[in-house]
Image (cartoon, rainbow over all chains, first blue to last red; front, top):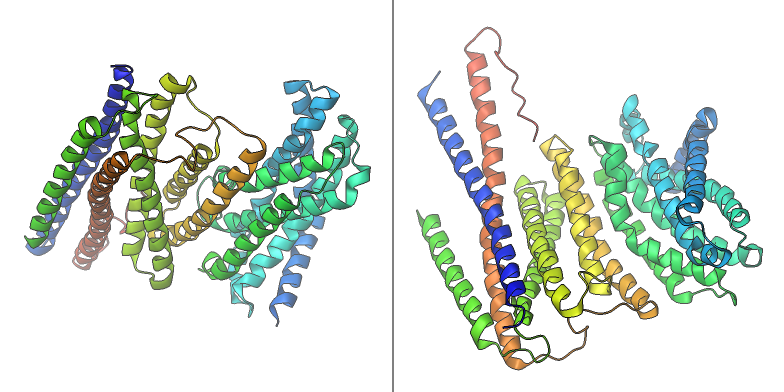
Length: 47
Length: 224
Length: 245
């Protein structure tokens, strides 16, 4: 089991980078969809 | 009006502007000198170390100095919207870009013309025997620097923080040019001095690639 | 609804690929003779670089397409693929040293391939920085497209110059060098991992693209709202310029 720590560290690092980016992206996407919907509502609803 | 003639007219305008204000080339020469002097404090090189690291130092100095010198190329046009006036002229966009490239080439050559002898004296590296071939290598390297730098000056003229942006765009891109120029210069400074054909060919290739790209894309650089 | 179904199906497929490739990398691939367990980082490391390079290739195609058509959707694809490519490159740059240090005793070496990929990574970070510093969307699209093309043209030049250089100034070469053979099972597992990684990359890229598209749509909707509101009042209450990004 030589170097299991390093393999594990790499595995963690890969998933960490992926998840940080993916979660930030998903949140931004959700916020944007919400805003599009609200703006469309306002346009339809009149002043 | 033919492109070549237009480019030369732009070149003349740039030269006249620089002669009138004299701010650019002088400041750049001083900056490059400072880099060369700081090298001494940072490394305190022996004669053989100076010979070994000299080419690297010279080209780093040229790249850094070039990044500063190339910026105003297009940024200056922003002040009085003079680029609009150029755009209205019946010349191809590449003529405008090429005129500026030629001007920048001349300015950088001036800087190098001062720096190389100074370096030679300060670090006791004799270059007289290889002057001809050194001029070839330096010209090819400078051409690459100037072609890409002028294009990036046009790009960063429209951006914020352009003085910082231009080097950030330019220097990573010029890594191959730096390697090639340093290696070619180093082989000239060795004891049986030799002109390294591989690196000189590479430099020429580099210049051709980016000159062609600039020519194809110049329309987008000068546009509204 | 159909779009959602396609996306869900794709996500499931990619998810399955990831699990499969993970299992294969850990249990199916044979153990490497000299390095042992840690060599399995290779099955994450190589796909990261390949995905980065694929993403940058997609980006330059998008750049060229933008300049020819002036349709902003190509710009959205450009920035999405560059950003995703940089994330892939970051994974490559992290897994590399983690692998290198226990095995070769050094965190980094300036051999041709490592140096090339590092420079690429920097080059495209500059692309994102350029975009950040230009406010008008059309100008930003145009300028970054031109820069993107220049950056991509540099890629072969960077690689060739580094290879030439490293033949005269050699450095310890990681990962077996350019011509080392590879065991066929390892090769199959590596391919599986590459497909899995590319699959994830494409899914994330689509998301990032959608972010750009929606941002643009929001600007459009805001402008519509502003012009409608200002039609109905004496003076506009706020300017209709979108926020700078």
